[in-house]
Image (tube, rainbow, N blue to C red; front, side, top):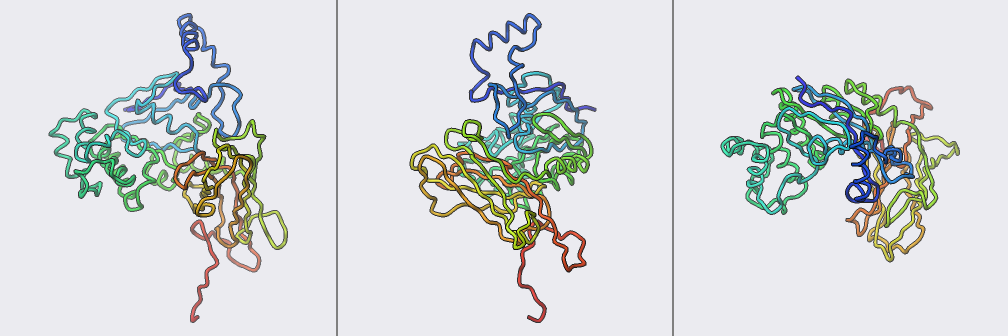
Length: 419
């Protein structure tokens, strides 16, 4: 039995605007629609490719999406940042409406899209449990029957009568997931929010989602953690630039995803008028350079890696840092580093930063780099996603080892017998 059916679903956004556009555009669209003609603005709507600067005012976040999900199925949805995953879940959760197409949902939907979704910060944890249950259409008796189980699973018993505005992000996620999973929705939609929780709680969540699916309910799961998708899901979709490019078994879809992104991208540069960024900052260039004693332009476990970043700052006397994240191809963050503390004061103009990853730190495999400009070490001003991609290879000189060491790092640590 099909619980979710999505037919020719598309979502369009107007760049740089709040809402759908101007009144004259809305009227013009209505006039074309009642005459049975195509949207006059579709001709200037572009694919949602974050790596290029758009030339029009509109962009497709999703374009002609079609799929169905059966009862009891766990569907994983993967893709790079900006691929359209969250937009799809927001439409399925009825947070926003599609531009085109239709969705059919058979059953109650519980969504966990971001930290604190559906919670009133002024209410206590106890009150929010009852409020969310009522929104899902459950009676007070049904909620009360599940209440102790929800609180026990969340692990926030001590704070259940405290307003949730005083909760940490991890506590928010614990309680929100416990509510969504225990109030017996027919469809459970979970975005990447589980990344906020600790490892033990993530394992509990994965186990609970398996229990939900085995009870005949349906789960949609978005994550950058490929192992979680592989272990939990019975089927997967790969989104790229707002379209489905692969569908099938999790192993097959994940392999397609990794192969698509495993293309070396050691750098890029932009003219200021087309550079990614906003009113605070824009990226001029980023470049990766391997440093080796033999001078060869290759990246192995014995190569140091120099990353050079140039960016424009448009804010007078900006106190800010760069925060650089290195990710494995499967989505796990290997490490995060920031520039100096206390953060420097930046004048308006072009600035440069340099980061060196020492040799014999990274294991073999594919990695990618994202970074952001952060004001006062707390407020992100712009996130430059996946701006570098590279592969670390093995050096097989004088060794009989031809396997793959586990893990993302392989540091040269002093470890001896009878030392």
